[in-house]
Figure 1: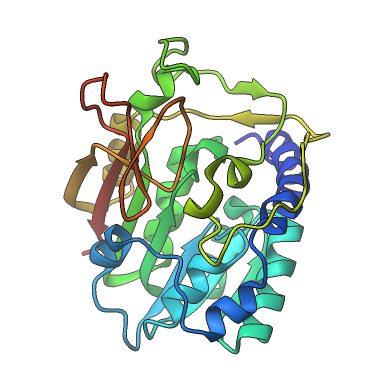
Figure 2: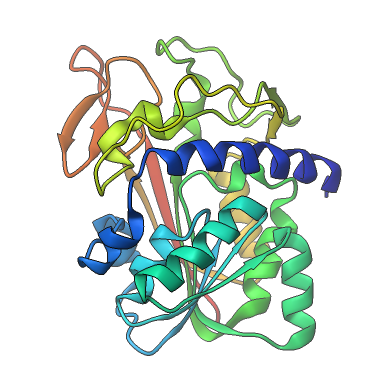
Length: 282
């Protein structure tokens, strides 16, 4: 585990979160009006949530967590960012949708939850999460440790194959490099995606954001993820690849496919841009 790198990323996320939420307008009003930020994929992966306890890992500012609570789950969201958890807590109160949000490094949180005997029917990790984690073994064992018997882990993530490309679709990076990749800092991807991620209506907000805090990313291959979950004692029930990315405009000339799904340019062949896993605890 590299807690020093996690701490560097916490600072970078704190700065980026302020910029991201500046583009989303009155989110409490969006939720009070019945809004949801979920995509069909995660709803399908999780199944019926009515009356279930759900843990949302790396929940960011809580918009998806509150959308899940609206489906009937009792939701706990965990994130390393102080800014994200503070925003999520306010949004829960102002929207009238009940959820619990806890700020912690995920690895420390897992150990404390294990000792306290906390258990959940569903665990979700969604979109841009594991690249911030330095050890998938600790992650997978933590998930297994907080799932109830028969509980389900749903995971949806951007495809690691897509991460070999730079922004111009030119192959540039190694697939699942062994060492973390240093970046200038978490950028304003909400500004890049516009209404795809600011679903309540895009606002200009912060302009020309530059993150003062560098970040480090850990790029894991699909085999790394699957094996970590198997080693933790979970049973893989489903592995799916998708030829589109939900909301994310990570490359030049991506085209809208409908439903806030983005695909590569028409001049390119189809390629996997997301994948999903469902794993269960016996």
